[in-house]
Structure formats: C-alpha cells, structure tokens
Amino acid sequence: MSGFLPDHPHAEVRVSPNFGQRRDGMKPDMIVLHYTGMETGDSAEAWLCNPESEVSSHYLVHEDGRVVQMVRESDRAWHAGKSSWRGETDINSCSVGIEIVNPGHTLGYRDFPEKQIEAVAALCRGIIERHAIVPERVLGHSDVALGRKIDPGERFPWRVLFHAGVGHWVAPSPRRGQHTLRIGDAGDAVEELQSMLALYGYGVEITGLFDRQTEVTVQAFQRHYRTRCVDGVADASTLSTLRRLLAALPIDVDE
Image 1: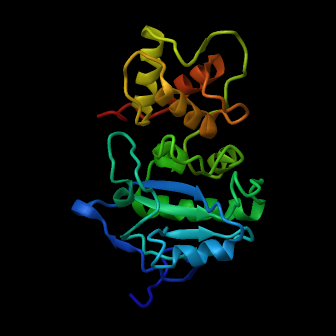
Image 2 (image 1 turned 180 degrees about the horizontal axis):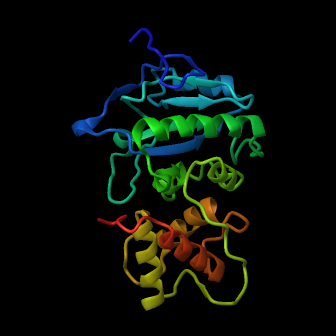
C-alpha cells in the first residue's frame, strides 16, 4: 500500500507496513489509547513505520497536536499485543489504536500538553462517530493488557476527555474509611470485587482470593478511574468508584 486518504480530516499520512486484515469480519468497536514511551515523537513515529518493529498503530498524536495516520481504520494495526476485554482476546481486530507521544514512566513521564489532548479528543470523536463506539469502550492499554502495560498512565486526563465527549468516567469517590481488600484476603467481598471488575470488562478470574492477578487488575482500574493513588489496594474509594461506574453503564451492557 503506497498511500491512502486519511480517515481523520486533519491527519497527515505516513504509511506503516505493519498491518493486516481484521479477522473474522470484525470491525472497530473500541478505541485503545497508548503512550509512545520513547524519547521523541519522531523516533516513535519512525519505529511504528519500521517493518523490523512489527508494531504499529492507526494514529500517532504529537505533543503539538499534529495527527499522523499510519494504518487505515478498516485495517488491523498491531498495537495491543496480548490483551483482552469482556472476553475478547483479539483486541487488534476490534479496535482503533492511538499512540500519544509521551516518554512514559521510564524516560521522564510528564503531563500531556493541552493542545495534544484537544487533538486526541477531536480524533476520538471522529472515530466514535464513524464506528458507533460506545463510551465505555474507550480504554487505555493498561486496561486491556493487565500486568503487562501501564500506559497511558495515571497522568493521562481521562476526566478532560470525558467532558469533551469521549469515554466513560465518574468523579472518583473520596478516599475515606478504613475498609480495604488486599493481597491475601479471601471470601465473599473479594469475589464481589472480582465479579464487578469482570462485569466492567477486565480479564480477572473470579476465585474469591485476592491474589497478584487481582492486585494488578485493581491497579489498572485505579490508573484509569482513581488516579491519585495507584496501589492495588481495593479501598472504599476504589470500590465506590467501581460501583458507580457500573451503575452508569447502559442497562443492556451484558446482554
């Protein structure tokens, strides 16, 4: 493929060779947001277009708000890796991937510039409109790749995106009270926590034992929805925020 017309009207096109067909007739019904985790946006863009990398995304958004499209939305980019959401494990075939330039946790994680987030929001709104994507299926890489990825991370302004018409969000419940669930706990309360996380979409096994997998899942939830403290402990704030998110979902979400 030598070139294509961009799906997003304000995108530049730089074609990546790293793509394929969406499998089994699947179409995009999800957006997955990443950070690049590299020193510069130019190096990230080059890597996503390098055949040796075997990775790509549909879009990359630079810190100055420039949007580059590398794979058509109709095609399958290679951005999610081993991942799952609501039982689906081929996330690449059902998602549009957006890389957001930020050096990430190992290279000097920093706030995302306002101009960049405005561009991400506008890009997402167009994707949502083109593919009828529901708010609760705008996710972070950390949501779908539990324990493997932590991007776009706790500095990513999900609240700002929500108020711009993108994603599912509620204001986090205040951190009050002493009730917590943590590693080593077991019983009905842990089973309820795991069930709620699984109902929302996380790939956690319901065992009634608060194990490492559960801790990692709680961390992923906090990194998206309760960012002030990402510790993997299911305190009252975390539990209340999760319950309120579930209550805000469409009634037929699990049908």
